[in-house]
Length: 240
Ligand SMILES: Nc1ncnc2c1ncn2[C@@H]1O[C@H](COP(=O)(O)OP(=O)(O)OP(=O)(O)O)[C@@H](O)[C@H]1O
Image 1 (cartoon, rainbow, N blue to C red):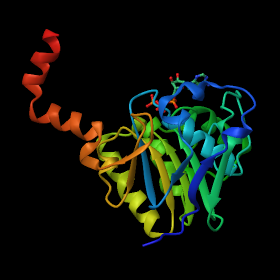
Image 2: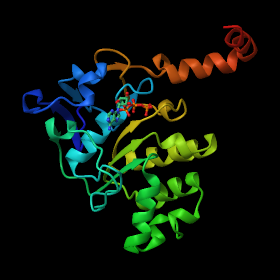
Image 3: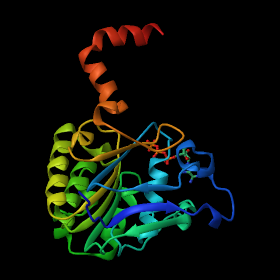
């Protein structure tokens, strides 16, 4: 079944590149020409440094989000370090999303300061300054109160601040929002979030970006191995 998403696919126009940037040395990205977003939820998985955040940020910036995170309307920048990859992207868009947010664990502090500075109504943020809540509390308060549905949500490692219990709460919220016409693209290492069904999982661990199953992800396999064989595994790890 064809699903019309807010972003249906991306293409990279390498001919537009004027100068080499760090992503030219990232295996998964240097050979990338296009990528489809066929499902309401797409996960980016892969080893640290495999290029997930770089691609997610480029998509976010090209769509109009602030590179440090926030909604389309947020316009702040504490440092300009985002790559030029966003300039090379061509997004194939469906209808315009009514809501949207680019949420990254990294840079959340600056975004919270911006919310304080502009003096917005804090009801959308759990009723208290994001700085007065714990990292995990504020992260989930934002998602629960500010994500309204019919939206495009780009999340970079949302599990970083969340306990396993709250990752389950996030999973429920994502499911609710998807049922309310939302699209998610999520870079994650969480074996809990990756367990959401009917998602497309893209692995950044080889020369091309490949679709894999939940059971093929490292997050699933290493967690399973550890829980099922903890004592034996620890013995082996310590002896190496
Ligand atoms: N602004 C930058 N300038 C130079 N190199 C960068 C920059 N940002 C990221 N890199 C490098 O690009 C590579 C990919 O980084 P990226 O953050 O996209 O990885 P990732 O897959 O999201 O990793 P993680 O799981 O650790 O978040 C890394 O080797 C990183 O050091």
